[in-house]
Image (cartoon, rainbow, N blue to C red; front, top):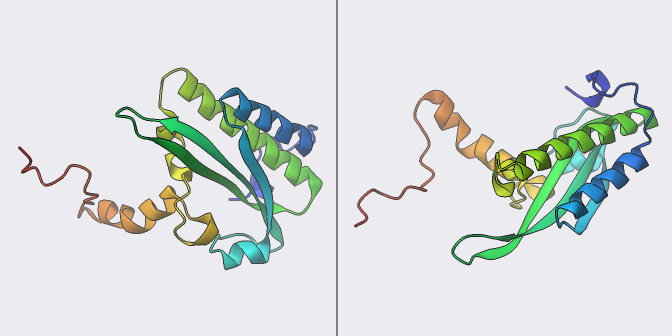
Length: 166
């Protein structure tokens, strides 16, 4: 499905630039000051391995969140969220940015209430560099682990070790 077929926010009168500004403010509220929006053309997206409808664009938000984990591990977590197949008309861009705004707002509300941790909520969108510039945890999971889970073979991701540890 693409934005073209989505009913959500189809008739929004909110200009995409206002939604983009609200997204930046939302990120800043949660300590995220390094962010970037990028419009990606159909051919560039296709070359990067992103499946999209022809004559559309993708809207990508990239940001980094500074994380301090228990045990002293700290660093930055790169997050890349992409809305593919946005038709090249302003009304669809307006719609896509409203969806983006509410999607992110809901994610941060879940984090703020303690329902999930930041890393857990944004895990599918963590940028890992595999599969070119659009590679993320979801793509790695989908390609490497999901087939085994769905076939009933399971998926050993090596998180639990061998069980022989003292």
